[in-house]
Length: 240
Image (tube, rainbow, N blue to C red; front, top):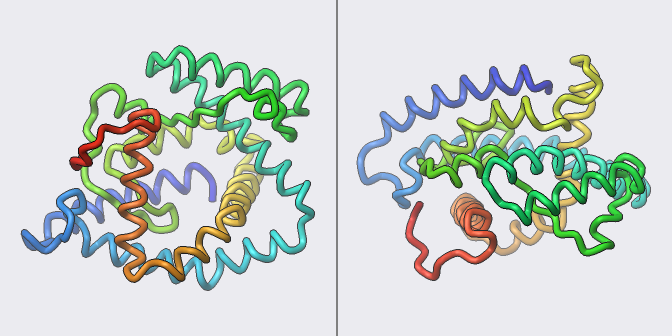
């Protein structure tokens, strides 16, 4: 699943989503932030079925057969690459302290941490500030837009969807190896490792949510709101 494939898939999904938005009758969506709810629920159902049949079993097997220290190293390695992209975005957002922390994390973990395999920066209490281009657009005043669920990739807002091509190009974790096969392998490993780290959370979701779609959607908006306001959102929870 190379960045080129992801970009093509993204273009198709955006067109399909816009068409679905135009065909959803007024008032059908239960949340004004989610005018494409019919389309999104269909995509959520597809993703959930795919996860049940393929992704979750693969992640479970990965967790079972791979030693914990190896999995931790893989997670740290990809987090360090993501921190490189966070350096760029925190700079673009004018967040001086977050930029300084991100630079420090990359320098320490890339050297003393053996190319990021060991997260020494966290042990030194240097905070991690994940920042992508979608968040940068939000800091620049671009509205979030409607909620969109993409096949395989999951929940986003339209602003984050528009930012994905930039993130795929700028994030070093999507450019590993320089060849399509190497990029495919790295992307799949990153995806499986991330899903393995969420196995416990997905079990909680299965047992707690009467409507998984609404639960995930509301959780996504809460997470994005917390990111937008550095973990201190205003008390009023007005839709963005």
